[in-house]
Length: 200
Image (cartoon, rainbow, N blue to C red):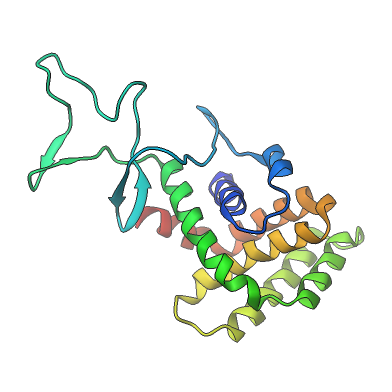
């Protein structure tokens, strides 16, 4: 199951600047037991394991009112401790922060690199594996050319998602193919890294 990678890529694209296909992106919205996973833009946030995460909200308020009139929650160091966010909340905020990195790396991805990848995606004779191999090679080459002020794996993950955005901006009809190939690529190349990042 690639739900984690799907949700991360979807939210990354939603949060990226210059994503020209946001309306079409809704057709790929990840679904959970509670319905579509959509980035939440309102509500208070809390720090959770180094990430700024939207605080889980109840139907009426952030916390339950108990019979004695007090709010529920545990006190830690004199402050009310927030409920742990759900995995979906963590995916949302991490994807948004990776999108910020992606916006900075965007300029490092040349048009000829994108056009070359577009040709691979348009070629019906190429298998998903061949496209993923080519994508992997492009991502590695781009990552090596970028000054490393962050871990290499994070740079490569962000570059793969930036490339997907640029491919679909160039040829919007490639949305479904580019998205699904990138989800497979992320699952194959970065699954453990993404798992650690969401659980750190």
